[in-house]
Image (cartoon, rainbow, N blue to C red; front, side, top):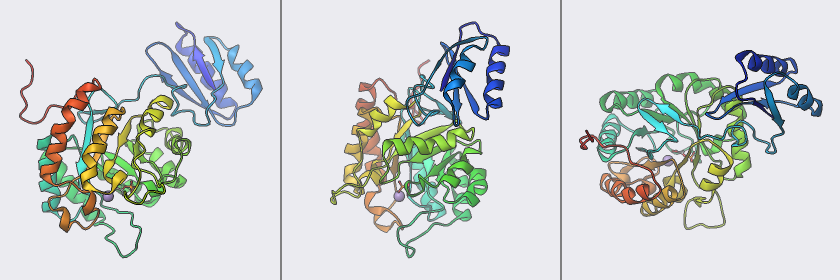
Length: 347
Ligand code: PEP
Ligand code: MN
């Protein structure tokens, strides 16, 4: 349920309500909006609680939340969540482009890619050091060495890093290097992992499970949020359908649906969403037109030689073309692309 505080209610009123909520064995999550302060009450609530809370000083009204997910819901927080990573704001006016290789392979590969994507206008570097693999015989990542290569690329370019964490055990290590923790599609319902990243202070990007409904996806986000970590973004990366031509079916409709149901930023990943490099640009444009707050794009200096996901990776040239083609679509949805290094800044 949702406790809406009166305009002009005091700090003591808020403390009193939070105290009552805790006394009842529940958790209260305060959301200080421009218009009003609301408290999301999370846990096993009971009908009498509504009356109890409604009579406390400073309370305007108590509204039951109709959705099973609470903290991720627009009912609890009307304003969009904005996540700040260094100078980059995810969920704001600027479209955020996350780019880099599927997997960290060598120092040269990551450094060359990082420099190029930065030049072309990307604002966050991606790269997997711990890779989930359908087959145990595929490349599974360089582990800690991969994290060190990513950190070097951040030092050289200033780009913040996003990288995947596969197990609860690795969260502490990966969080020491990463600016954003990625939870992969295969781990969307790994609840102990979600709890663990929820206990960190790092932003988390939660990818949609390949067979997950939107509700299941938002409930997974709820695991992270309810641990106290409010910096969660969602990533639509394609779902399993009967179609075999594409690797997955990028669910473009999920983007406006999630934006309607939730205040969390939504990133689209047309690389995993299609599995084919020549479909990445058209689907990236579609995702931005549909309201995505950002894109995640796989880029490799030589996709034919990539150890993972070469078929869906853009070359440097095709990534630059994508960035050029994005400009008119971005402005048609009243967004901006961040200034590129060397761009004229308005005085
Ligand atoms: C990835 O981003 O490299 C990845 C493994 O993605 P997903 O979890 O969506 O398959
Ligand atoms: Mn990949």
